[in-house]
Length: 308
Image (cartoon, rainbow, N blue to C red; front, side, top):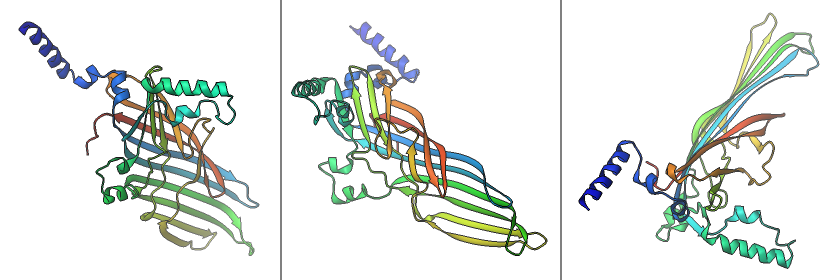
């Protein structure tokens, strides 16, 4: 018995030296399914680069736009339920249109999923019976770091005014800064697992841009009449609305959520965590322009809280 114990100790020592944790060695699909709390860390990056030549009666007009907006967040999936979750239930027959036989089959599917499926919601402090009013109030405060870096340049050349003066006008609009945004969890951040198919589904929100006095919006317009000194005008202030507006997936996800995405993946307990990255094409509005861009989600789910 001592010899066997020694062999076991050596095996685990070698595994530790190789950087493999005991949890990764022993984790199973059942462990994943029965984990009471999953800890989510994710980042959402919106990028767009655009240039267009506009039709104008006189002269030429060119617009260039560059945008990067990054938001990161952490959530606790702290409300677990056995069986199918809202995402899986949505894929079943519409109860308003189903026959009695269909309804019976649906009930059996839900009942049979209790041992093979589980779902989690990010319910915040409200799921903790020991939470104080202050803890719950913090859930409604902006806490997710966000950064925006936007530049738009409208270059207008060889314009002619009513006096016949030829001039160039360049307008540069910038929105830059770092702040925090509020990202709600309950109902918009959902995790579901299916042990039978070894798959998971995860919903993540787009997030929004930080607003407030720390986010600066500036417009600089420079007019250059031919043969005359240039004239410069500046306008600055805080960003007061979410930017950009009308952010939408292109094409829309048939099974997506409003203001977010649905990500599907394969479970691999040997990895010791669930992680991935997925990019979606999007459209958004910038003044008169409907622009294309990309939205990239990078995420990791662990059974232990992330380091502070």
